[in-house]
Structures are given as structure tokens and as C-alpha cells.
Image 1: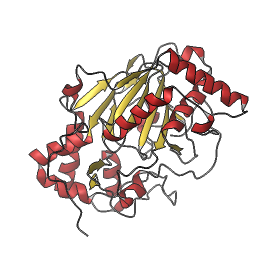
Image 2: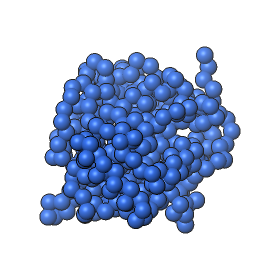
Image 3: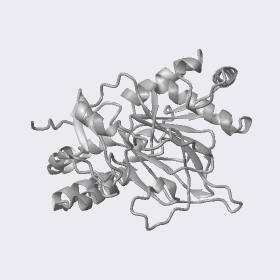
Length: 346
């Protein structure tokens, strides 16, 4: 069955460009005193019930007043620009356990928090773990190196900033829908190969655990479903997937993914932001590519440290079933573990 390719520009809020938001901060949601009181009460409720983060549902973390703001955030994530930042969580008031409890509670109100590494962790640090640079399956979010524009394996990725770097570590976002518009206008010949897709490198966390395993089928970079343009893109994983599959990318395929990458980092397409301690960035993966500059940690030993969660939204009609099977899977656990603050493989 031939794939349906959208050959018209998208003109709604999902197709934003960086300069469109230069003087617009409506994507920032500030926590006020009432919101913080709600969070504090919910945290105390969880403690009275003898629960900890990772164990409770949104019903066990009641937010009677903050829930209206969270409903608006959900609307923006699904139907608006596809990203928000929640600002103002006072980390100095909470210990690590309380911080994670509050963060988990907010994620639980958005949807189902899923595993994002083979250890089954649902919340893990994004920090420099000092891993060997010659490991071909190393994930760059465990280093201080640049993160190229990509999407993750869930509806939503959440990042809570605990500590920022001494220098660098700037977060960049770009609209994959606006990128689709640019391809349509300037290189429509790329659309067919991008919709046809590529074999993705599992990097050792696939069904078999084989470090050379790739996806059984091609994963589209773009699909058009239910009136929405959806995206799944990670240039490095596509390139290593082709090598491991044993079928080199054609010149047209390579040029197409290079162009997606080029558009995502172009100054007139992206928005840059420095996440401050207490900020929570929330991104719709199918509408937004995210990237990060390299960084230098503090001289006194403090490290840039964020906590990541992957969340699948309830009642999501955005994706076709075949596309959803891969992009909503997270990274299924191959063993159970108790994650420690010191770090985990992510």
C-alpha cells in the first residue's frame, strides 16, 4: 500500500519557526504560590500513604487547582507548538526524594511514564557519566558532547533541570512540521524517501539485545495521519542502522537526512533556551526535534544534571498504528533495577 504523502504546507501553530517566538514567551508556564501549595500538599499526601515516586498514579497525587494549568499544557503539547517550559519549582526547598516525587506526580498527570533504558528506569539522569568515547552504542546524553537534533521513543519527553553547566548545554528545539514545509518547498524530491523510511539501529537495546540488531522494517521520518504530520528522526541511528543492515544509504537518502539535520539546526528555524534549575521542559516528540550544545561542568565538581522521563499521552490519535508501534515503545526493560542518584545507563 502506497504511503500517503502530504504535499501541502501546514499553516497551523505546529509549524512555527524560531523568529516567530522571538518576542513570545507564552510557552513558559510559571508556577505561582497556589500551584506550589498544590504540589506541596500532594507530596505530603503521597508520604502519608506510604508511597514513593514510581509507585503512585495521578489520582494519588491530587492537584485540584494546578490541574487547570496542566490541562492547558496538555492542549499545547498535542495541538499547539508542541513544547512548553514549566518554570519555578523551588528545588532548594526539597531533598532528592521530594523532588522526584513532585516530578513524577507532574508526569503522571500528563500520561503513562514508560521505561527508557534496558534497566527499566522511568526516571534517569542526563549528565556526563564519563563513559568511553569508543563505545559505538554509547548514547550522547550520557556525555558532555553535542546532541544532534532528534526525537525520542515516546509521545513526550520531560526534562527537569537540577543543575546547569558552567558553560554551554543550551537546549535547541525546532518544529518538524516547519521542516516538512521547507522540504516541500525546496526539495520535494526528498519526501518519498523520507516517508519510505530507514532501518534504525537498536544500539543493543532491541528485542534480542544483539548490539548489531536493527529494526525489522523501515521507520518513516515522516508520516501523515489523521491530519497530522508526524516525525521520527535520529540521523546517527539511521546511518549506523544502514551500516549494520548491510545496505548503504543511496545518495538521495543521505542527502534527504542531511537536509533534515541542516534545517533543524538552522538559526531561522530553531529556538534556543538555557534551562535553569527548577525548569521542566516538555516536548511532543512527533512535532519537535530537540538538540543540545556541548558543555563544560563546574570547576568545583558540580555537574550539569537533568532528570528525564518519557511519557505516553492517553487517547492519542496522532499516530498510525504501524508508526506508533515503534515510536511509542520506549526502550523495554530487559531487567529490573533500582536506579540510584549516582547514575544509570540511559
